[in-house]
Image 1 (cartoon, helix red, strand yellow):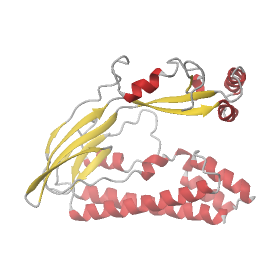
Image 2: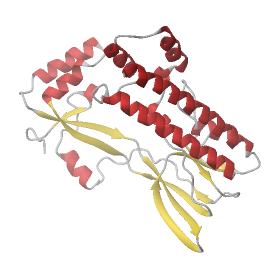
Image 3: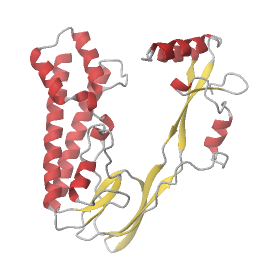
Image 4: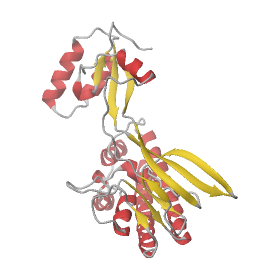
Length: 295
């Protein structure tokens, strides 16, 4: 069963790569249509847009890709985008099947495959060659999952904005934190973390807190059946327009981190319940103020 899943993974990845290449060629063929890469410092070109939309690997050192933009495309290219999105769905479903065989733990794909193969107790030469060719250790899974977004027809305007920096805050028990500590790769860091956790009483709850980058959003205005439609969406990457002309547009640069003392509503109240200084920086763990708080 495991070997069948790995083979299915390789086949779905090959199909994903092929669809990605076809989509890129289709975008390039629409060379007479306009495009916009508002914050890209390099040369604005369809090749730059394709490189961003087709990104499936962790970038090389110094590599900079366009983070946003609008590319006008032909109906044929839109169809290729839909085909690519279906291959992304199939690839994601295969990854999910493999994760379910390894207790659903998130880890790098090459490590995930190694774990599955250890359970199976076999690794053929052909599979070894296929894995090396796929170079899965550099694969950015989230980028493989990310769909190519198509804007509604008759797009009148798009204005980008940023949602403020926010945090992920989840409770974690001392015992679960110890399990996480044992997985740390650096022996010295692992020993320090385990020592700090040993000072806490059994059952003590900590708070996992990780800052997230500001989130890019866009306000869209388009015409549909003679009526003006408006919608605010969370957006990422370069998007496709089904029109032959670019919409009116407004770009706002990422404001970065804002004043940490400014009110953040409910999230700020959650933050106030934990020590602002991390107790264990390597695991993003904080102590709750006033004792253990799991609720």
